Amino acid sequence: MNISIITVGKLKEKYLKLGMEEYVKRLSAYAKVEIVEVADEKAPEELSELEMIQVKQKEGERILAKISADTYVIALAIKGKMLSSEELADRLDKLATYGKSKIAFVIGGSLGLSDEVLQRSNEQLSFSRMTFPHQLMRLILLEQIYRAFRINRGEPYHK
Image 1 (cartoon, rainbow, N blue to C red):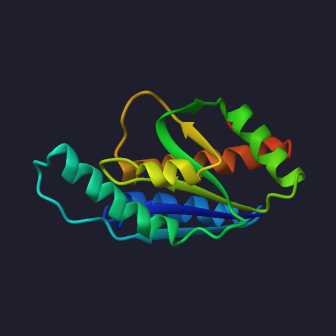
Image 2: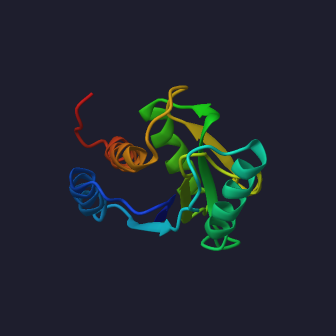
Image 3: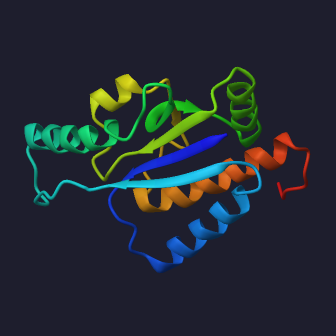
């Protein structure tokens, strides 16, 4: 299975980079994992509604340019479906069983994802109704993908 995590912005925090590197290394036993960073759109702190939409659209164009037609897309969105770790494991297992070998998880920037990216997604996943920093979501997502593979293989993993 080929898994891409497409995300907006560069990761700067060293402790998050180290955590991500560890999970990418662990995941290499189960899947090919690629982290794809697209540039975030520079914008002032205070934005009008229209400016917010424009920023998300520009970031969305960069995201969509990284997704091939045969990729199954899971967008991380607050309004997405919430799954348990076991349900995510089952979902990934079913995707692999039905020939979806290229999966992209998409994490938007600080303003979220454009409507175009949400429309391109095959499904939307929410980790919580709370808002998390998009940089931290990368690490949380990698950990959950790793956990899913361990669950699917019947390998021990803390609960």
